[in-house]
Length: 433
Image 1 (cartoon, rainbow, N blue to C red):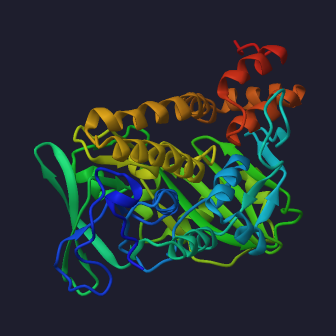
Image 2 (cartoon, helix red, strand yellow):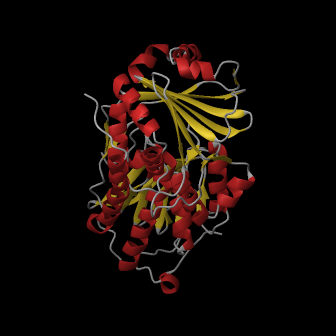
């Protein structure tokens, strides 16, 4: 099915009939209501939501799906709400997603604290646990849902350029795996193509970030009693995360300064082995464990993205910017930004106005949704960058587990950051001298 819609049926002034679709000859313009670049969590989510509104959606992804991708493979409790709305949560449960009741955080001096995902005042998690889910499983469930809907998904199709006319984005150029050209025109283009977004790049929205970190990731087995809690080890300038995915599979990620890893680009496994040894509490935790996958690297992690000035375009997920994975915000941010973007796109198409001013409602909603947590994340970067402050913070949280649970609720995306003020004041926090 091509997923075509008509103006008469749906009342969208911007709706256009498809001129070329699956089965049409390559090179003929394909007209749609929305073209989504990228079919990862953000792209798949917005495609699902827009298709459910009856829009004609074309999704282009350069890979054969699902793809392998470096990821912490953590889904916050609130991510489950969006995944349920998208119709994929049951599939993840059936695939054996690990239920994570909370997180254990270990400071440089060995102080260890455990927080739980639980109700905090009026705020309740969608589920009282996070999930450890292999990224291929998550992406597979989402793309299966995409394939079940009347939309046009084209895999192994690489977007090469963005079409701009009169200050308005009107479509994209792409090529399939045989390098045959394709042009897709639509009133709205959604850039959901990740950290190296071609949409953001072509529109001049990307810029470097001062925080230059690299993530090293692999899988291990044989870590004792690593099933119900995620684990974070802070030891400046590094931190590491253990995220259980199953009884004998744990995601191990170590985040280090990019400059430290760069000379070892051809010897990543040796570098990661040496780095783990320099994190003594992590090294003891992994004593007797076995690495069961190659070491892969991703970086630099952080990048800045400014909102597009042109109309007819939105950026969602990592394409809209990324800071650091310490709080595991990546997938939830992708899913929630897709929800907000879908709401804006539907309103704009119904009104027949996809100008930059009309689509700016998405950026306002995005700031309102994420600005508070971004401030918390930046404050945490200060904490994890200084040994003394990291030790003091863990000891203070150990004395006040309620404050830790509130902080974990913020990590879990169901406690608003403004609620931390009462939790911290109630814990009697005072900055160390």
